[in-house]
Length: 79
Image (tube, rainbow, N blue to C red):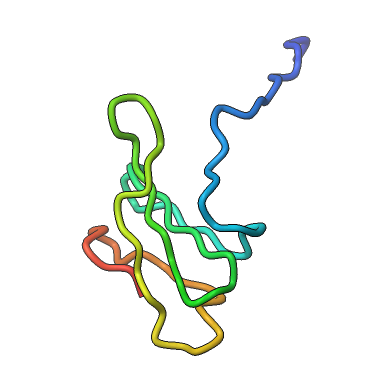
């Protein structure tokens, strides 16, 4: 269409996992991001005053950690 391709850039790096993320899931409203790096922890990130911050740390019921997860449609739970 003649429009220049949009350039993508890193807005922020979420550094609190100690290794690369293996699973991520955005909440339905896009306000939170759940991330795991394969250990038994899932961290939930949200924009707090213009910066992404870890707002919750959830321990997985699985010994090897969560490999995938999903938000319920209303965003109130993560499974």
